[in-house]
Image 1 (tube, one colour):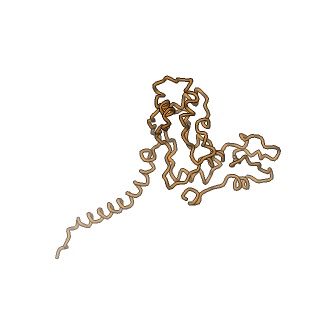
Image 2 (spheres, rainbow, N blue to C red):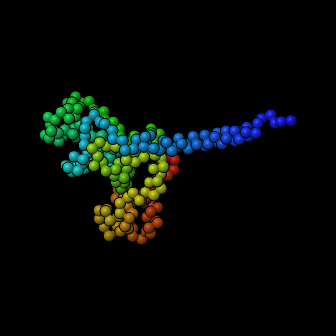
Image 3 (tube, one colour):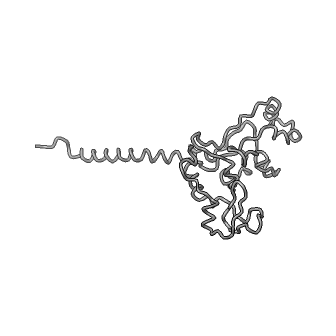
Length: 229
């Protein structure tokens, strides 16, 4: 008596099983990879702003420091956007009749803030304190890139959880050498390649070994509650 199914049905069965397996395993893998692509993370995408503010002109040409405009960066949880009072401090005298600055003048005289488009936008479930990172010695460029060379600011880094953890596990690679610190006296440690700054400049006893300094002054915040509170 012949079989109920033809012989080729076995081949079809295994093809279907393999395809279903690839779909079940491949779909999550594809989604995990896709959410890390620039299309989702927003990397390298210059955002149009209500005012054509060119950082190249202000930073490179005029030598304006980051903290002159973003004065809250080292003392607040957010870096903040400068008020139009700061802008008009210069532009009441320079380019004070430019049509490009009409939104700035309107904001200044009306008291209505300019609605800037946010470039670096972390999810609401992520706790991030800007001042902690700045006062600990993280350079602006480590996260924001060379903003002074950008006509329109764009997000340079992925800002994913993995990117944050890479820094939190090995923070010393993103900190400047101790030689860059201001003199603190005879007890200052002269250890090249290790930044020992904290909320305040810290004095490091020379007796500490590299490992002891690494543990004491470059803490690794990698617990869940460090970022998810």
